[in-house]
Picture 1 (cartoon, rainbow, N blue to C red):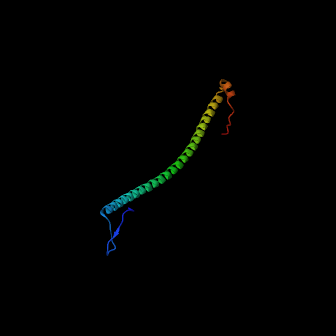
Picture 2 (cartoon, rainbow, N blue to C red):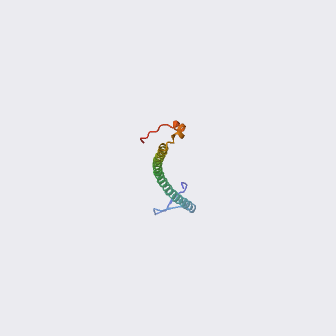
Picture 3 (cartoon, rainbow, N blue to C red):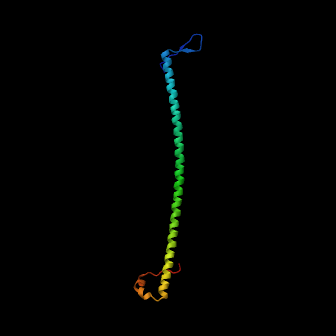
Length: 123
């Protein structure tokens, strides 16, 4: 394009180009416009992709936070369930021991009774 030389037309403000130079200038302009359109389209696609990435990052962060909350609650629920199960088992054990005591059957369990630790009955 730098090699194209425009020649002024006499008695006018217009310029003249040779046919080959005009065709070269037209082809360069078409290529430039096509390139600008492609770049504009690619820039729009890049902006849309960046926006989607930002949205997905935000969603991942919120889901991660929600998951950690669920894990925390689930852990507390499991601990509570285990405590309830332990209390139910202790209650059954106390009732079995009461039946053994009531029927004077401890003599049959004397060696096992000596090995069992003393429990706190206040619970």
